[in-house]
Length: 184
Length: 188
Image 1 (cartoon, rainbow over the protein chains, first blue to last red):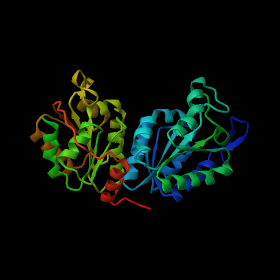
Image 2: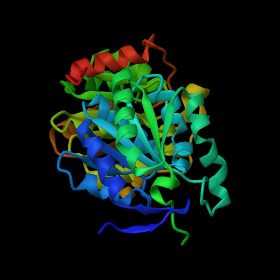
Image 3: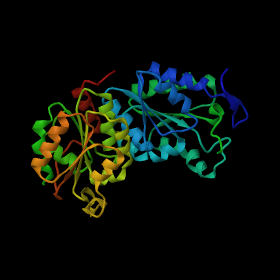
Image 4: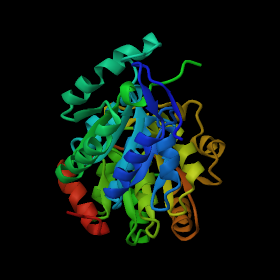
């Protein structure tokens, strides 16, 4: 039976089901390089991808580094995604704005939401709330996944958009989908 | 050593190696020394150059990858040294052309001239194969070994401040497309 816990928005969510769906979509689109900074919410997705022989999963010290590494992998012929929290988008601005966007290097930014429904930490709110507008200011489109049923179509559409049009595309994993982060 | 002389000296060693150059003088001098399709010129993203090289090296394990980073850029992103050490791509060589200044912004001093030993930092981050070189001959010898023996390698090359300017194409998409065509990685 899938592990579940109470979602921040008051729903029971499966920790594993959406992660498995997301991993399947990434593999279908040949997204084989994953850069990330560790995060509780994305843990299962990352473990699922690490178990996949075709995938290279790189733990980075900073999200900007993950963006640059995944961009380099694209130049080297491997499609990639960065898995990060909304706060990590803040750490990625220069790599995105002065490299990935002007060079038109496609990638997926898979962003676990902080600062929205169910947030307990005031320090997460301003940037978490601003992320879609900050990315929009750079010309980067953002799409949200609010339910398990949306996971595959939204992520698949984002992958198509990113790699067909040579742009980074962000997909926000909302707390309604993931249940959010545990206070500890 | 003079940076342009140093890069000119290593060009014959490169073969089909991919070379990523840090924005500013390293990009200018690499272009001046030898504009080749396997060069990837950065025009932005200070602090990201070595990570771009890491990504290329991991995606292209059969090809040598050389990064020409700067001291200011490396100091901005020291964490990437730990990431390179953790994944140990054998085909990656990180070169820091260290002139102890932020030359492109007007020659302000960096901490590499005051206190920070970037080779010691690289070793401390977990990189086992490192060198510091001060002459063109030493640089060529170190890079020749790095292109031959398994890495990853970290070479700190102490260079003089030297103004340079080359008319490197300020066309990011052209730079990307040409590089990917040279590597055979263009798809779609």
